[in-house]
Length: 217
Image (cartoon, rainbow, N blue to C red; front, side, top):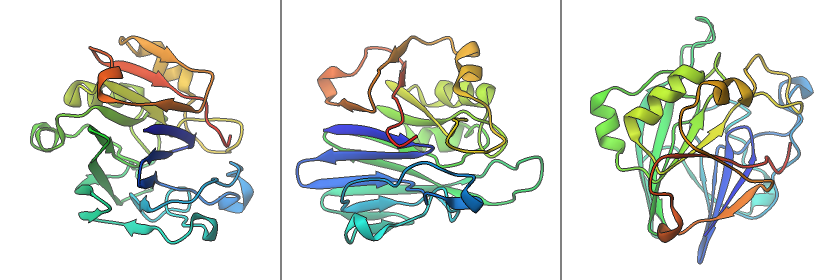
């Protein structure tokens, strides 16, 4: 199974018989302040964590994916969905996000969208165990570096994959990845590639921060 980071909070998983995309964005959103290139590929399932243009754009080029905004099962992929609080941007945003937990290829994934706060014991217990956690780190609209560390502590994933951090392709008031890496105590695996082949037997024995190069940045 291939994991690809397209940029921002958008990841794709390609496995035999099913291609799944998470939080696809609209290229050119926010009066072109969001300049990631369009997402390539065709997709069978699209997970949408909340209704913002940088997370919910289903392009015609994707084909006709099943768009998931709650608990669902498609093509053998069972998706659980839990409510979470969007980052509040200093009180300017009061919204919920959908935290997705699902299995593919013998692995369990959690994508929390623009989650702004640690989970708490009850919700963390519902999400564990986690093989791959897609981890917001940029702050303002999501968890910042310290909250991201708490999310890792709560869920103890095998891979934590940072997302929703500042890159030149977007004019957003969020932090760069370097701010999270300054405080991160876990080992880091950095790839000069946007993709990684995943299988249960290839996962690290302890939590590792996985850095993928955004393909569309």
